[in-house]
Amino acid sequence: MELDEPLAASLKTYAETMWRFNEQLNLTRHTTWDLFVGRDLRDCLQLAHLIQPDEEILDLGSGNGVPGIPLAIIRPDIEVSLAESVGKRAKVLDELVTELNLNVPVYAARGEHLLDDFRFTTIVSRAVGSLLKFCRWVEPHWGSFDRLLLVKGPKWIEERGEARHHGVLKGLELRVVASYPLGNPLEAEETIDTDPASGSGEGVILQLSRKGHLT
Figure (cartoon, rainbow, N blue to C red):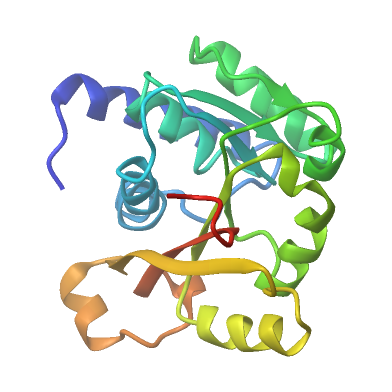
């Protein structure tokens, strides 16, 4: 990956700040620059290419701020908000974005509750529940956003089968809009079907929208 030096410096500052907060509250297992770049940043760069200028983005279940905070750094032309229902993590995220001088609102609330009052262009999420659970969470709120972009590992095919079995994909269009190796590219070629928690294997980004809603 090639990044402009100022952008790389900003992302490194975020990673180092997150690791410092990680000593107080368990936010991430990716506590080296290689792990951050090979997994977290790679996901975020793939997402960044799929978002149009001026979109309003909600990072649902933000956790350690990925992908929302790196997206805000990489794409200053979009509006990013974070939703984290665990109060302690939301407080840390708020301190994190303040320290990084980012204009990123942090909501200590479940995303479904936010969607009762706010509207977003796109909801992004990473490592937050299965496809079945996620579709059930947002099903009553499709009028509050246009599409979902979900970062998934190799098990997404099993999740799609489960979601279809329970009928939650009816009326929705699901597309794989990005597919890419995780971790060290050479290792990923040899371990393409490994557990995504290991930091290697194949990652995908799934786009879900109401049928006929997106042109």
